[in-house]
Image 1: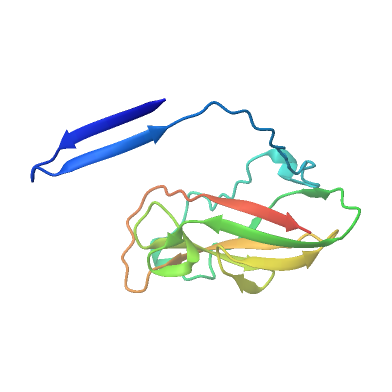
Image 2: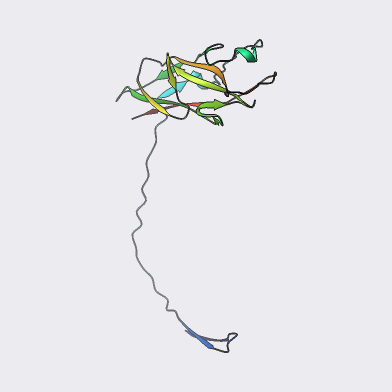
Amino acid sequence: MRLWAIAHGRTGALLSVLLLSAPSIANIPVNIRGTVIIPPPCTINNNQTIRVDFGDEIMTTRIDGVNYKQAITYSLSCDIQKSNNLKMSIQGNAASFNPAVLRTDKNGLGIALYRGTQPLNANTWFNYTYPSKPELYAVLVKQSGATLTGGEFTSSATLLIDYQ
């Protein structure tokens, strides 16, 4: 079948298009590939939300990155057969005044993280060996020169575990 199309453009040029088609049948192999993923071998806190409560009596003038330090209490259960080398990260939105600190919904207030006594930057990974469970802490920090207002605050983050 042949189809000729003629069109006139603004400049009056002539456009010709020739379309040729012929029915044909082709035999082409199709390869389909994928990966079956097994369920993650670790369960964090029995799949329940981890809560850290700093209490109701926080004095804004005493927030200094030391006072009000709280343990992040969680459980960790892993069924690992190949390797016990894992990586962990706490990921969340960073405070505008310090990218290593988690943001809260109160201006000038953030939450610093610790692994034991060592500062732990939010959104970074660290290695550990199971069955040990890293001791994690959260402590309130404020932006230098900020005057905090009273009231409730919240923050959220996600605890992630990566395994090889």
